[in-house]
Image 1 (tube, rainbow, N blue to C red):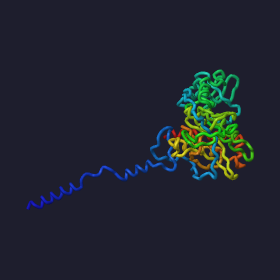
Image 2 (image 1 turned 45 degrees about the vertical axis):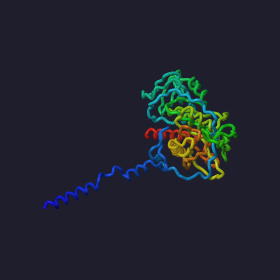
Image 3 (image 1 turned 180 degrees about the horizontal axis):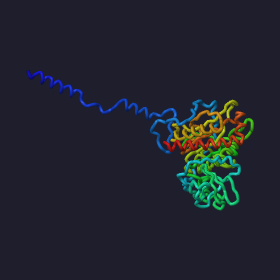
Image 4 (image 1 turned 60 degrees about the vertical axis):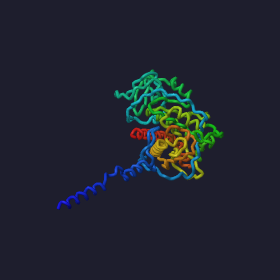
Length: 401
């Protein structure tokens, strides 16, 4: 009579043995993990020199169109030299600057000029709000001088300093940095922007490597285009907007390094990038205008490298982010049609960059309407404000990620 019980017990034990322990892996979880690390079409932006490990997320407020330009934009004349300038550290600058105040853009002031602090200077508004503690040699934008006081526009705050606290002489530290690395250096804040006004007085037909170590050669610098209606040379438009951008950036608390402030320079595309690299700039903005055989082509675009760029593909996410921020803010400020961010590995001045880089193509000088618009003072001011807004947006994104 006890036998059925033992049979039942034996069958139960056999069943438990056959089931064994549950598997430790999870196929669906692994697959989902792989999906999460696959790059998306619009990449996530990363902080400089940080490898990308997650799929990018778009940060646009207005979608970037994916159309390819009607014609390939002409290569800008960014020509590298064979040897990069020696790298030295720029002078220390204040950090932890406050948020921008409600003051207008510096570009609304016609008589603004760059001055430098003579010593440690506490900068505060008329109501006593402390803006920052400026160090000696710090560049500021003066917008008005009455008797013995100078009004400064700094990070959106209007502040007043005694005239004997400031000088128009470039500080020795900035001169030393310029002599070592080239460019024109304005130490004014914790973030440094390298601004390259595209082209120069004369083209450079000699050839240089497309990128570091490349056997493919390209002309060092082209002559650029010119306005179909105004006949203004692109180099002139680029420089005027770049100088306005310089002033706007300094007023917002950025340090600025200008690749050129005159047409009488001889700098190839690669050399311009190497100068920006040597300063350790946080962003490299190359200001250009476009041209096309199609007179109806119009609109703004920005250009960066691809993720597969053999010279600096690891900077793609950051450069794409910079390009996207610049394009959206620029078009919002100017009303110019927003085209697209073009990723290409054909630009020498991009390939030699070791920092986030973008080319800002402001519009088509081959389009009579855009050519005439870009010749106006109002447009150029708005262009500078829009580019500065784009840099603000880029660093805000960077801080958030």
